[in-house]
Each structure stands twice: as C-alpha cells, then as structure tokens.
Image: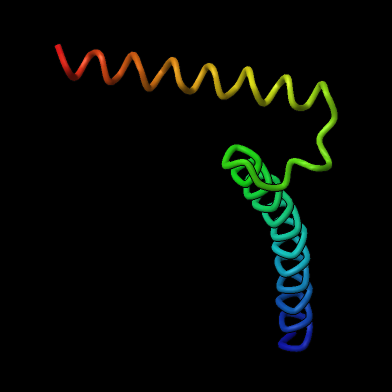
Length: 77
C-alpha cells in the first residue's frame, strides 16, 4: 500500500510539473510579446513591421494620446 501511494504521489507531482512547464512557456511567450509591443511603442524594434502593422501602431498611439488628453483635461478642470 505504501509503495502504491508513493507512486500515485510521484505521478501527481509529474503532472503538476508538466502543467507548470506548459503554463510557463505560455507566460514567457506573452511576456515576450508585451515587451516587443512596448519597445515598438517607444520607437525601437520597428524595422520588421510592415505597412499594416505600422498603421495599426499609429492608430493605437492616437487612441492612447486621446485618452491621455482626456484625463489631463479632466484633471485641469
């Protein structure tokens, strides 16, 4: 019985580590994408962007600037 319980525990631990490893890979990919987006918004890492990507980035920047202006106007009033 003890060996069987120990085997079950080891199997469960392996599953947890496998799930954590997969989750870690996904989180690293999200982190990498967010860092790249931040660099692009700061003007770096833009050489590999196409015309459509540049247009989308410009739209996102315009939206962000509009939000900042609205917040700034709200605080001034």
